[in-house]
Image (cartoon, rainbow, N blue to C red; front, side, top):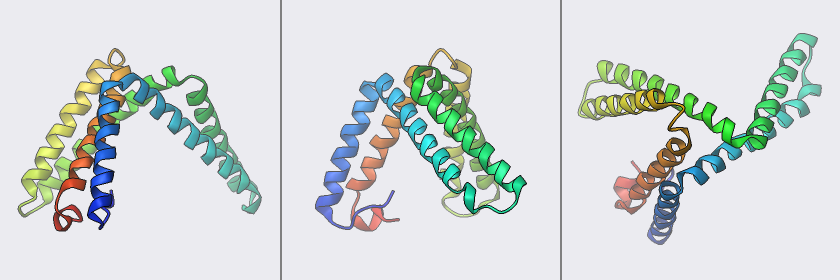
Length: 171
């Protein structure tokens, strides 16, 4: 996340991120449904974009694959918009798998890295892996609060970067 150079803007952004993070943590169900519907809306826009670009493609096989891609985006997006609760279950499963894959990548990066950041990368990989395994182990029973809570924690932690001194925040 880019950090504004202006201190007043950084503080305002930080306060807004703290408030949004706290709201997501306090109301994780609302946050999860809003995120799911947001993903659905983005997928619908992506599908429409794919359809609009169909005419610019040469070759029937390329056009067919673009059409299939557009239909996939539209179908998934509309499903998420029409059935956000059911879509949250799928999104939580995807999130758990994504965290596990990210953990493997972080652990591999830590194994091949040298320098002072290696321990931090290793810790990040371990924590991310534990979170991913916990999400997958408790799926689908914890679906409705996981996405909203994790999103809220992410927003809350991002806020602290805004409160750091300008030379450290831009690193």
